[in-house]
Structures are given as structure tokens and as C-alpha cells.
Length: 232
Image (cartoon, rainbow, N blue to C red; front, top):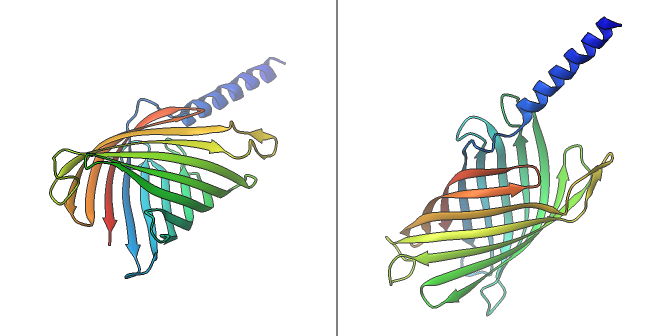
């Protein structure tokens, strides 16, 4: 009987160590490296856009996510609205030394439109609806709203060879709570708040470096972000 009790405590200790190793270190700075592109088909209202993102738990080496996303865009006549229908493939890695990953395929639709206040303040609004096919989960949906704010650091607006401040806040809401096998998630999925310094390299190319605070139902973490934005 004593051997059984001892074995139980040993197993509990091992499980506790595994759970502790799987816990995300919220004090460890992560990093996201990103490339965004947006292209028009000559004078057509149609185009393509997308992004490639390498997200890391610890700056470099411990994969958080590899995200590949692209979509077809359409700009209605006499508006600045851009509509997108797209697809994304996401590989999510676990925190720490483990190599386990979870794959996800995602279809999304979004509406993106600017609202400018003179030359100094430029806001963009993005509404996105996602249909998610996550490995070992039931079909899921998610709603996202992102408010972008760009402020030039000169009186000429955001033009070539100028610096600007970039901010955004994005809210994620789950469409369903049940994800299969008796598991549930909260309606609130996460929130991301971001601040950065940007530089307009040319008419169609800019770079940003900043920090993003991500808050989920399970953890909160800071991530450095380095991004290249390419319009052509």
C-alpha cells in the first residue's frame, strides 16, 4: 500500500512539473517579425493583399506561430473601402522546449476603411470575420475589430522620408464557446494594444518598430514587433 501511495505522489509530481513547464512566462519578451503587402491589378478595382508573420515566444528560436495569409481584394467605386476574401494557414507552437504544434486553416472576410482628420490624424478601421478549422477542435468562428491610428511627426503628413507614430487596438470575440469534447472557451478571446515608431521609406514602403501587449483569458504578454509594409 505504501508503494502505491508513493507511486501516486511521484506521478503527481511529474504531472505538476510538466504543467509548470507548459506555463507561459509572461515576463519574457516575445517578438513578431512581419511582412505585409497590398497590390492592385493595374487600374482595376481588384487586387491582392496578405502577410507573412513569424511569431516567437522568446525573441527568436521558440516558435509561437507561423502565419501565412493572403486574399483577393475589391475596392467599390467612389469609396475608400477595401473588401477582402482570403485564406490563412497557421502553425502554433507550444511554449518552452517542446516541439508540438497545432495547425489551423482559416477563411476570412474583412472590410477596411479609413477616416482621416485633416493631415495630422489618420485612422483606419478593420472588421474581420473568420471561419476557423483548428486541429482537434470543432469548427469555430471569430469576430475582430481593429482601430488603427497614425500620426505624422511633421506637418507634411506621412510621405517619403518622414517619421510617424503608429497605434492600434484590436478586440477578438469568439463566435461559439464549445470547441468539442466538452471543452469551452470564453466569448472574449483576446485584446492587442500596440504602439510603434514608423518611417516612410518610399511612396509604397514603410517600416515600423514597436511593442504590443496581448491579453488573453489565460495569460498576458509583451511582444516586440518589427514590420515591413509594402504597397504596389
